[in-house]
Length: 362
Image (cartoon, rainbow, N blue to C red; front, side, top):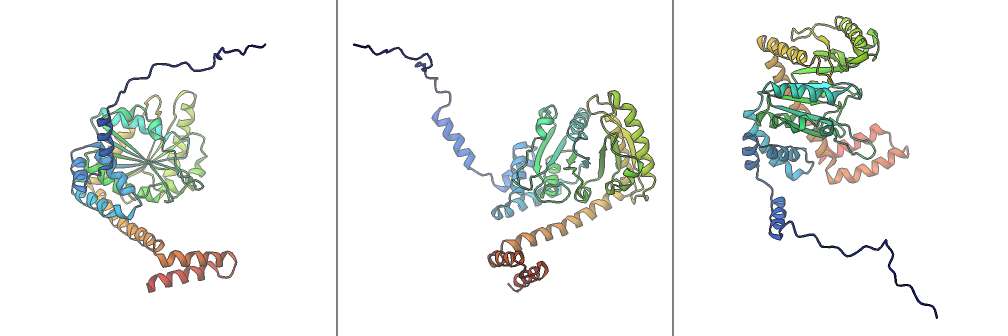
C-alpha cells in the first residue's frame, strides 16, 4: 500500500504577519473628499497672487483644458491675474535635439536663483503624431533645479501647435508673472519647425548651437538665425573647446550678413558649458545688456504691445477653428465630404467651400 507524501513544497508561501493599518479610514475619506472638491476661481487667484505653487499648477491645468466648461473659469483667473503680470523678463530658448537645452536651462536657472531671482521654466515637449502622447520628462533632467524653492518647472505637450509651443503657453506666462516669478524661460521643441510662435511671446530669443553643426553658409541659410538675439555654442568643454571657439567665429561672421534689428541690438555669439558652468554668467550679462538697451529706447514696450495684438488675433483664429469643428451639423457633413474627397468625387477645395458655406449659413 503506497503512502501519499504530505510534505509541502518549499515554494509555498508561509502565513506571515499582517502589516498594521498605517492610514486611518477617516484620513482616507478626507483625502478623497478634498480631491473631489474643486477650488473656485477666486481661491485660485488668491493662491497665485500669494505665490502658492499648487494654485498656480492647478490654474495652468485649467487653462490647458480642452473642456469648454472650464473656459469661463480659466478666463476669470487670467483676467484677474493680468494687472499683476508683465513684470518679468521672458526668454525663449531653442536648439536642435541633443544641443543640451535641458542641461543648459538647469545650469542657467540655478545661476539665476543664486542671484536671488525666481525662475519659471515652461518646457514644451513634442507630442507624437501617432499616439498623441508626450514624455514630459524635463523635470527628470533638471533634478537640481526642480528642488530649488525659487524655481518652478512646468512641462507641457506641444500638441498640434506649430513651432513647438503649447497652445496655452502665453496664458501660462501671465499666471507665472502674477505669482511673482522674475524670469520666465520657455524651452521649445526645437525640431526645425517655425519658431515664430515662441519669438512672438518673449523679450529675448536665445539660440543654442553645438560645434560641427555646419559651416558659415549653413548658418546663413537657417531662417531661425534672423530671429536670434544671441547664439550660444554649448558643450564647450573637454576636447570640444577648440571646435566650439571655431564655431563661434563662423556664426559671428554669419550674423554680420543679416539686416539690422529694429531694436538696435547687435546679436552676439558666445560659448558655454552647462556641465562645467563655464560661460553661464556671461549669458545672463548679455541678456541684461539687451534688456537695458531696449528699455532705454522703448523698443521693449513697443514689442510687448505688438505681441499682445498678435495673440489676440491668434486667439480669434483658434476660437473660430474650435467653434467650427464642434458644430453638430459640421461634424455630420464633414464625414460625408471626407469620403467624397477620398473617392475623388469632390476636390478638397470644393469640399472645403461646401463646409464653410454651411457653417456661415448657420
